[in-house]
Length: 265
Image (cartoon, rainbow, N blue to C red; front, side):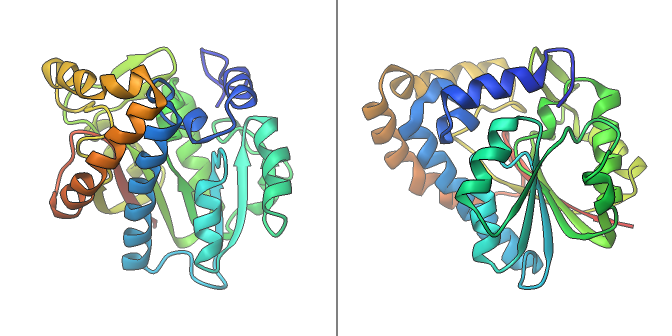
């Protein structure tokens, strides 16, 4: 996304150095722990899209910010036809080789649409954006991204995405903004969406952005083995994974990342 911290350059460098789940995930936690985190993400994704009938054969899906293609593969496994759009050139070029039956475009969803992406308005049954929009730090570009996504969907199409949806005031760091649920609710409404559901994606394994400073310190202490070595991160992930799976299935709210399902009006 184009914003104050030169996002295109940042992600191009980061993914050229780490084209892996570590690179698109939580870099400080290492590859092994990120693999376990993505197992949780995959479990939640599979359950939610099945419950909502998304990505079925014949449906057109646009994945915004596909990264290493984790969700591209899952959409294709469900039978959907997938287009990916990312601002980092390395993503489009690499994924075009990995997923020859999908299509990949290099564009910034937070900027005015231009060909070829502007030729796709009203085409998609589903747009997904997982762990993407909170990296758009400028509010005007964030609003434009939501408007662009709405325009790319068919009327009645579904936007499924992940964010922190915090119940406290919006918090900002250089390359990420955890926006308040109130601000996000207003933004998606202005973009022409109706919110249908919000589902926990993490309870323990990702930073508790919605739980305050002490919870953040406790989480950092819990994650310290993963920050020390990949091997310890793998052991910690193996230990926490079955607990996390049970928690996200039973919880109604999360202190961390959640999925939101919106429908274009």
